[in-house]
Image 1 (cartoon, helix red, strand yellow):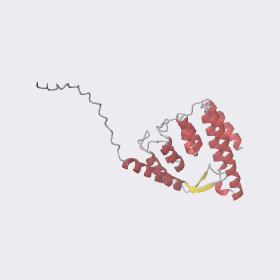
Image 2 (cartoon, helix red, strand yellow; image 1 turned 90 degrees about the horizontal axis):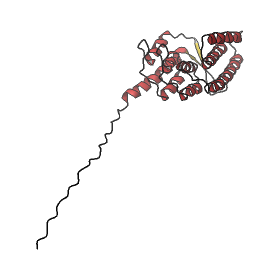
Image 3 (cartoon, helix red, strand yellow; image 1 turned 90 degrees about the vertical axis):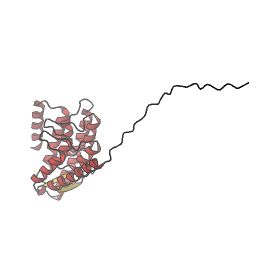
Image 4 (cartoon, one colour; image 1 turned 60 degrees about the vertical axis):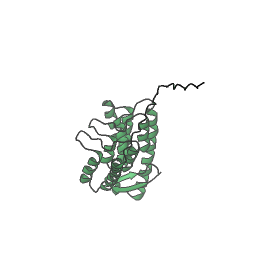
Length: 223
């Protein structure tokens, strides 16, 4: 049943004319959400099985998209989806392919804003390391930190699952509120560092002065 949902979704995406990269990302998103569904009701063994399967799906998606990037240009929307999923390899792949780290979608939101909204501290840190603008604003005049504060106020205590892409099976269970709090901490520290960084003093190089040569007459010797 879950694969039927994925296939149906991909058909709808194709009809909407989305790029193959976006379609593959959305397929991965649906797979991840399916594997994490009813997580609290799963046994330890079932969780481990789903976590391992998710790792495999993430790996296959990266390999597929790496090939697609050779033919298609990724977009800001693709970077935002990868940010939401916390796919650091894909995020860096898109950035290296020329997707601007501060590019905005139709809502005038950046990938950093998505990381803040969905409580993805690792994604936020990666974007900051790549030069993300901490002070950019969306169509409503909100910065990334504003979106994180807004999300924190709305966050429920539902379990938020993050599976570390660096491990074969690594399960880190935190509430949405905790994840958003971590993201806020990263944003706050980065903004403080940006505001307190000393302003570099521009070095002024004086052009060489071409002094006219002056012939000084030598006094004649007296006879």
